[in-house]
Image (cartoon, rainbow, N blue to C red; front, top):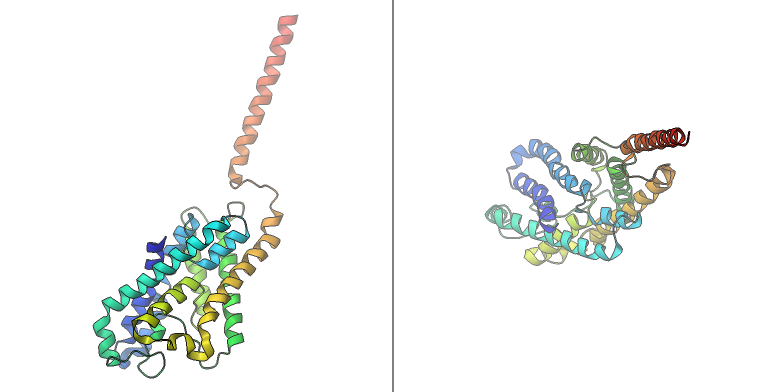
Length: 278
């Protein structure tokens, strides 16, 4: 699980670091590439989530709320997710260390013209308030969890088997395009807090926590609240109304056929006994 979180954290951070340390001449084109390429890791990791892996504490908490994950496993999952994201950020920093030093002249900062802290973690736009950021993350993560549950629910129409990662990737693409203006789209406490802890230890200092009126807790608390909200909404509006509690509704016809076969066998047996009695 931790190495999957490593990949999920490393890919978008890698893309951002390469883009930001390029020349300003290509900034507009590279920003567009960043917006596209950041979403790539959102597709592959959810393949694992659909199959039982968890890379996002908000999703893990939603599964706990729905009774699909034992609560004692939740801290273990979150620890692995955080560790994977932390190590992923460290790997990116090591890979692009020379580029960082060249771009920043050795001064690692969160704000200013040569700021690089936002490569690893999310920071709000100048227009965004704390309350606005919290609502942004609650709504965005709630929508993400709600859609994921609809895709992977075996009792729902869902998506064809094997297509779930693509479906969730497209969902993440839609959320990021429509709701990424305020602060990007953290949507994952581990993906944000793990790399933020790394930057605090790697030279950016405590500024990573104090910037923007101590913004750091918003991408942590907001997605967790949003994940719970998405799970509750899905349960009340969809899961609670499933008439069949089987996870595989397509097996029902087979069971009915077996019941019909048993009825036919019993009727033949009765006829055979009647013949013998006569």
